[in-house]
Amino acid sequence: MGQMKMKKLLWGLVIVVSVLFIGNQESFTPFHKAISFNEVEKEEANQDVASFIQTVQEKNGAHLYFDRQNAIYVYLNEAAVEVGVQPVSYTDFSVEEDGDTLNVLYRTEGAALDSDKPVKFQRLYKIQLNKAYENVIGFRNGEEEPFAVVSGN
Image 1 (cartoon, rainbow, N blue to C red):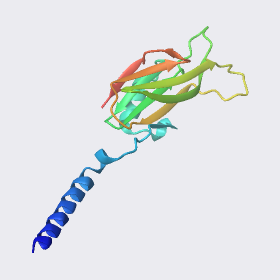
Image 2: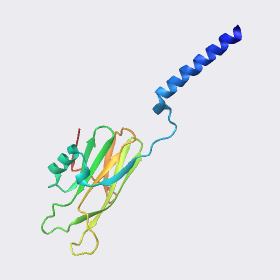
Image 3: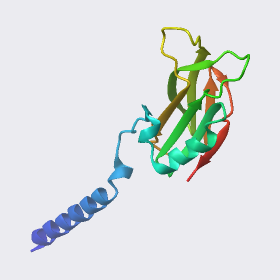
Image 4: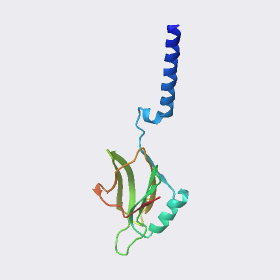
């Protein structure tokens, strides 16, 4: 009789631990999900992001839009070409984690309008977040540069 009671107790414990593990499986995940990003077309952005782009399209610079808790959009814009100033093209983009800080890195270079090389005056990137960050810092050509406009929902 004592053995039967012990088996029931052991099975009960296994069931309780299994339920707790399944119910909280995200907190038990041993792997850290990597941050990811991709370039998206402005036409593919949701309505909130499209509205944000509409409000900043006349302002050059890097613009940041927080889309709820799971994504950040970075809109790089140099389409407002100024007379007498060489146009700038965006050539590279990446992100790096540094503890609770997300670094947004992008490169620019002077653009010759008569070149055969494709020129990108505007780019939109979606960063899928893997956690909440205390800070998001922009770096243009390796130098820290504040975002021109920051918004979100």
